[in-house]
Amino acid sequence: MDNNGTLKITYREAIKQAIREAMKKDEKVFLMGEDVGRYGGAFAVSKGLLQEFGPERIMDVPLSESGFVGAGIGAALNGMRPIVEVMTVNFSLLAMDQIVNNAATLLHMSGGQLNVPVVIRMGCGIGRQLAAQHSHSWEPLYAHIPGLKVLSAGTHEDARGMLLTALQDPDPVIIFEYTFLLNKEAELPANAGAVDITKAKVLRKGKDISIITYGAGVYKALDAAADLNSIGIDAEVIDLRVLRPLDETTIFNSVKKTHRALLVEEAWSSVNVSSEASARIMENIFYELDAPVQRLGGVEVPIPYPKHLENASIPQPADIITKVKKMLQHD
Image 1 (tube, rainbow, N blue to C red):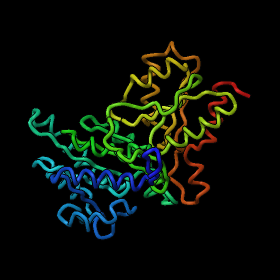
Image 2: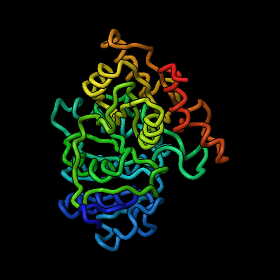
Image 3: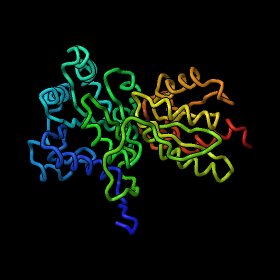
Image 4: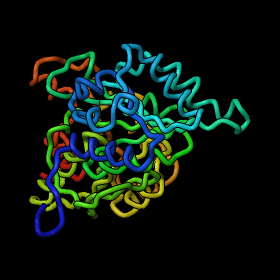
């Protein structure tokens, strides 16, 4: 800890601290997922927690996403507070029936009698050449579904705090965590804890353009904004954080100030979160714009294995800088 009362921790450690704190606060909270116990998690997020809390609360499960996500939903229906870990987002397709047809619909189907307070954490995005089976950004699939709250932990603060608030929600919450960020260090207050999970956040104020992003795009956008500032372009950076429901107020207020918007995400460029945000800007505050809304998304290919192609398949800070310069006609 430094003199300012902050700690430098990795994104991985921020997630682990959140799980540990949640389990200490409430005996009804438990973690279940593939390899979360003896192995310590596929990405070492839960390493050591089995020894601390025991196998009834750090629960290894069979390789059956439909089975263990369904078990988590059942536990939530019966008063427990399960944290269900889906190792990588592609595996969640095997549990899509449970998530979409059970977790998201039971409150409606029961006439308001049955809440499903399950939190599902998913590893997401590129990460150290995991290729086309373990590297995609499928947040838009879940942001499409009524009955779910969909969160994106694009900062260490949110990796540390979103889970704690999500566990208080009476309805199902999906939290996307980012493999690419696991080893990244950042400073957090030593007493960092629960965060609001209803609003987007302005991470950098600016007046010339709004860069609106989420997830693994957040730190890239901040890096790009810092470089743009050195050439006289003052960019505002917004982390959406909540992908369903979108916080229109924060988005609109920013664009009304800067009059330009660039939407950045790693998910494929067609039919993504940026598409929805762009449409809402155009429908609601079109006359505030001095230029068309622009988007930067992933190249529409399965994520390649070679490192240089993996990097080329998603927006990088240099791409953001180039796009902003063109939008502002900056030579």
